[in-house]
Length: 334
Image (cartoon, rainbow, N blue to C red; front, side):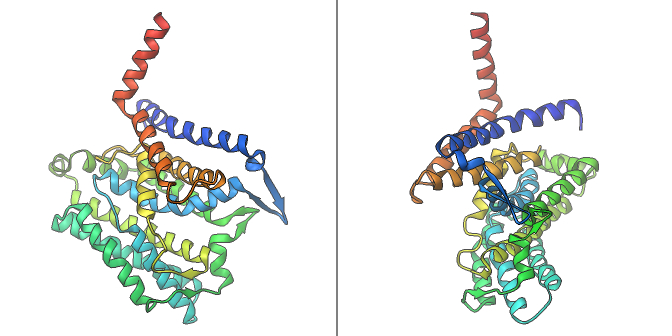
């Protein structure tokens, strides 16, 4: 990564990071115990720990969504894929199958869903919003068919550990997700893959004439996004210890898109910021927790979230940045 690219990423993540810090300060003012972290039986507990744990599922879906959006696409089906993966886990565990096979099957279902989306978008040429909307609608029905329309309770301590367990005193789920983020960052920034994805997102036609397999790259990012959604479905099912095909992953695709956009990746495709996606997911989860703490009614909760996203998106835009820069220069000269 060049110095200019590093400066750009720092500038992009500055505003969502500032918003996250502002929310933390606001919560600390209203509730001094907000930042308190307790060590109990060798495990860390507290609101900040809960935020990381709850945000890990959004982070995981947003990781795959980041690369999809970087190619100029979008995946609206991830919430339904989460429900399908949870249903697969419940059925297999109820039938007495092992944990590793269950996780592999759930992620396999995600990969299959991502492959279907990738083929429709990259090979058939269907618009991403239409192609993924098909699975978004049909996926819930598939999940309900798998569990026969029932909410299946999962009783398996090893499975529950994935979402609620601890490793060296730290919750396992965020450790797992942050590790995947770090590995993905290394792959896309230390190899040419990241440049290929950005090239396809910037100009697919030009990248194809330059010799890139644009269709293959687009298909692969949808497969990766499906795998991330499948693993997120495992974590969701492990957290609630049940497979709820009606509510699991509901609106998760919107939170994932919000996290990616707030994190500095443009919906038009091209440059993407993986660190920004992490901060964006934490920002959204912290805002949700803040609204719960302040007693904001659930029906009104989407309004502050939308306002925050608009504010951060405006502050990140080059036009607003130039306007603010000119404003500060005028004040300095005066």
